[in-house]
Structure formats: structure tokens, C-alpha cells
Length: 391
Length: 239
Image (cartoon, rainbow over all chains, first blue to last red; front, side, top):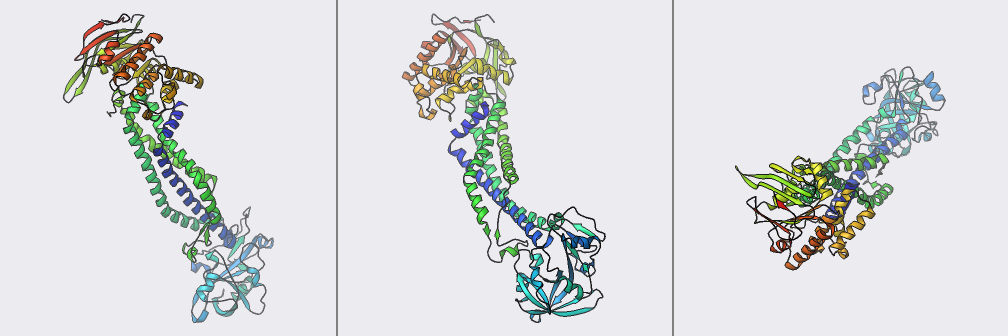
């Protein structure tokens, strides 16, 4: 325990230099934690939003269905019967039928996806219950983005055209019953929600569905013939990839900041070994071995990171706590430009793993950076060091 | 080595490369120092005083010959063994004091004891005793930059003797001090030599130091030119 004691003594004795290094390093620590927690919050919020609004606890896709391939949608439908029907009947899942169509708002042509949903479903947060009320017309529910892009308002009527299962084109008037707000663009933009029964009738697909959305925490997953189950990990993969790409770009900033802090530590160590040659020689003369001198200098550097964590905690905890409550309010309309399902305020998500991982990263890198310059000490002759010379 | 001998060098040679040639800093030096001696290596700059002191202190190794210090042959010691020898048995006093700058006087004196693994209470007593010997117990909390040259050298002496070493090596200990401080320092070392029986070997060309030593070994061009007893307590001899 002598070397750690000496390291603490040397570090505290160095005064301003120690504190400056610790403060610079603490900026890196807090900034990395802040950035990473923001992206973690970003990811968690998106996954939660998507789960609530679209994915549920996972989805059964009819064979051949590929949401990224518009040509697959026309044929991607199958009867909900047998085990699928039982699953839906038990309330653990809700079917959705998807049909491609076109609407003509204000004389324009807009391609849309007509989606049929059970108005009584409780699995997704979509306000599908509003579709129950209308009997004479075909009530439709659209999101705010769709309403904006189509120029539609609540109570408006719009003509929809689609092709049924036999390939025949048909058209009907839809009444916009309600416009909902959601952070999930994928259930909003370019989509019109109508009653499942209406769409089945319109598309001549009685009792059929394209996907079946399972309830949250769905399990165990049953194997249903003709349907394949897509879990949340699969459904969220695009989101994860997008976040990874975005966080990579921002990470460059943190890496740069971290690099600068490491450079400060490295320079300090190089300077220390150079400037403290006489001190090193004296320590050797007093009986400290070279190995212990190297250990002492490395530990001094490593302790900078511990001090930086403590300094960072002093202002970082209140700051990150405040930020966790207030979040980062995005300018109006900015949220959609991210391409992710996020609200207008981004909230960070802190976890013990993130905090400990970031602290460990800083500690390990600082220790390595501190060790590298001390290797010069091995070459140092005590007699030369005592005179303040290098050999 | 006879029972009373603490240092014995035999045909000690030390050369340093200088460009394409070599400088012979020590040339076949054979000396024996007995326990409790108060001896000085005297001579002009470049005569080999510091080189000899460094070899005796196991900070350097001879090119040829042998140096036996407290039963250990310096030329055969590895880094660790040499460090252990210095830590346990040898105290150093340097011309420029060489106090550790961020430590207080107390911490500087405590440093060798930390390496020896003494308990906190043992260290405290030994450090305060050592500071008391050199008359600086009231400056225990001062850092080197708050001490005068004389005070700094006295702290260095306290650090050298705090572990009660058998041997103290002092390289030009008064070179950076004024006359008054030099006398004070020398009186302190004489007192420690007499009271603790510590062997002191100086490298010096300071007349004030030479006046205090009991044995004067004159080095010229790396050779022992003269080895003379100047006081009643001196027991050394050139061999």
C-alpha cells in the first residue's frame, strides 16, 4: 500500500496541475455519459413508442409479406383461422389487414396504405375505438402527419380507391372521424386506418389479415402454419441501425474530446518523467526500485481518472439529474427529421452499466496512457537522474 | 572483510565513454572504511570523488574491481538488491538537497521508513526524533520551497539518518550553504556520528568540511594520492 499512498501524496502535492487534468478529464466523462445516455434514451423511447403503437409484443406475418416491398402486399393476406383465430379470440393478439390504395384529397393523388384494424383492440395505443361510432359511412382514422400532407381535417370526406383480391378496382368515400397524434411515423404517414370488417369487405378478403400483432410480453411464441413470428429484436433492427449510425457520427465528437483529455494526461506524464528526473533519482537512491517508480507514476496517472470521476460527479450528478427531468426539447417539427419515432423532447436513459462502463473505459485508457511515458524510467540511470539528466 | 570494516574496495576502476575515447574516473582504488568513521574523499572537480561515492552507495557499478559494502558486492547486485541495500543500510546526503518537492519536511524524512514498512506510530516517532536531532521539529509541515538552504540540507540529513543506517554518504553537503549553515550542518553530522556511531563518508573540497573529518583521502585523477588520519577517532587505512 506504500505506492498508492505515495501516488495520492504526489498527486495532491502537485496541486493545480492535478486539478486541471482532473477537470479536463471530467468534462470528457460527463460529456460521454451525457451523449451515450441521450442515445440510449433515444433508442429506448423509440422501441417503447414502436411497441406501443405498432409492434406490440411481436408480430405474426403472413408468408410472403415484406413491408419494404410494395409488390408483396397485394398477395400478402391469409384467413385468420385455426390457432391464429384462437390467439385473436383469446385477446392476446389483434389482426391487421393491409391493402394498397390511393386517395384523392383536393384533386391530388396520394398513394396510401389502407389498414384494417379491430375497433375493440387494446393491444396497440391507436385510438381505434373511434371507428366504432359510424355506421352509414366508412369511418377513417389518420395521424397528424397524414392529415398535414393530405390537407385533411376531422369530418372531411375523401375518395379512396383500391384493388380487391380479384384484381378489380373499386372506390368509396371515407369520412375522417379523428386525427390522432403519435410519435410513431410508421403508423401515421401515408396510412389510413379503417375498420377491419370494412376493409375485408372492400377488398373481398373475408376473415383475412396480413399481420397479427401479439400483446406485450407475448410468450411463449406459438408456431402457426403459414405465419412467421417476428420478435421485437427483429422489428426494431432498423431503428437500432439508424441509432447506431447517428450515434457513430456524434461519437466522433466524444472521441475527439476524449483524445484531447488523453493527450493532456500523456503530455503531463511525459513532462513529469522529464521534469521529475531528479526526484526519480532521489527515490531510487532512497531505495525505490525502478519497477516501483514506474508503478508509482502509472498509478498517479490512473488516479487522475479517479479524481476526474469524483470531480465529474460533483457537477455531473446535478446536471444529468436535471437533464433527465427536463430532457432536450427539440424545435417544432425537428423530431420527425430524425427519422425515428421520438417525441419533441428527448430524455436520456442512465443505467448502471452505462455509468460503470464509461468510468471503466476512462480509467483503463488513462492508465495505459499514463504507463506509456513511464517506460523511459527503465532507461534512467540513478546517478544521471540524481543530477537531473536523462540517459 | 574484517569484522569492523563496513566498506572495502579493491582495484576499483570506472571508465566512461567520451566520444571515441574513454575517461578513467577511478583508477585502481583500494580503500577500506571502518564502522563509525568520519572520513572524507577530498580532491578537485573530476578527481573521482562522486563516482567512488556512487559506487559505494550502489547507485553505480565499477567497470573493474570490486566494492564490498556491508558484506554485499556492489558489482554483483541486481537492481532490486541494490535498492534494498540502499533502503536498509545507506543514507544519502546530496549537494542540492534533493528533497521531494511536493512533500513536507515530515513526509520527506518519512519516505525511507515507508519503504521499510514501519508502522505509523514507529514512523512518527522516528521522524520526529530525526527532525529533533537536526533542530527542525517545528518545521515538520513546511514544504521544501518554504525552507532555507540550510534547513533543507538539515531535512536531508534527517532523512539520511532517520532509519539509523550503518553508512551515510554525503556528496558536497555544504557546497550550497553559507559558512554559518555549513558549521551547523557539520556539527549535526559530527553529533550523529558520535552519538549513533553512524559511518560518514564525504565527497568534498570544502575546507570547512575537511577541518571536521578524521580521515582525509585525497583523490587525484581517479587515484588515491594520499590517505591520512587527521583526528583521534579515525581508524581507516589505505590498503
